[in-house]
Image (cartoon, rainbow, N blue to C red; front, side, top):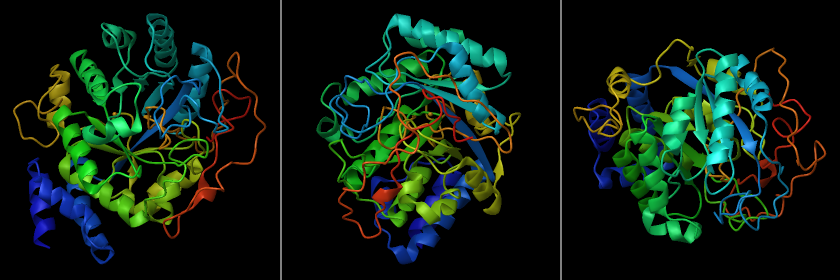
Length: 430
């Protein structure tokens, strides 16, 4: 296919595809799917080899959010039966993080629901970052706390944070249909604050909310312009009790085409396979490793993920390897630019002089796309339940069976509310 040859050539040169070319990837047929995956896989291997970076989620505060993001199980007015608890203490969060680090995670993602942190919250998270770094030499820490105010990004960096996540989620033109309590511009502003503070910016999207192909291309092009080092790609987890509970718009094939388009638009960026992969990619998850070079393992913010041991086996069986702690994730031109303090620029495939400028959350939202990684054969205790946590029985039934599975093969039965790990007395999926 001339289209794919052109996109591979552009990806190897870090050259931006045209909008028409990106749309054409999404419009390819199922008969062409393996060709699309193979082409995008060439770009992925050129910049990242066969390495897969592991990331681990610690949900510092669950539920109780005043924002109205339609995709989110933690939103204002949500009746989803998720865990609800207030802040984990620093030592509790550090113990929770130990499970993922023991399993090979290079990055711990600290997520908290809410519009944005108060200065007291930043102090609390700073102490948590310091505790995790003191207990685990060399681990990366990414914070995901919502909208940032003046000076907060700088304080998080001083405390030892390496990155900050804040997703754009969808296109600017449709953002108001998804959320009304803050704006798309607010989100862009927070990503820029992270850049300017010297943090590695992480920003991605949620696919499957009823958006058009044009919306998907628009948000990915906007991400490229913002130039984050990491782009998490979430697939909506339609929780009962949220406005998007009936949105089952994805097939495994469409999910792969979306990942391929992201890789072509941002060829040298850490593309992260995030929330909802088990629900929508299902048995085609190994093919996604040819497109994404980073994954969240184990459980997500409010939903349960595939067993971590199965994820690690999948990586090995597909011929990939877990990225070691001593390996730099980003290509040399991006890593060098980041070390030089360039907070913006054309690193996401632009070919500019400055090569640099990701919960993260589950696909249900919470403003984040992170998931928990797992320990292989290593016992790791979960953090103790936080004060004011709401006890929920393990194995409680998931209220997802009533979803309208309008896409043939949709699997609402795979949506499972997280009942273990942080905020509970039960061990994490590790």
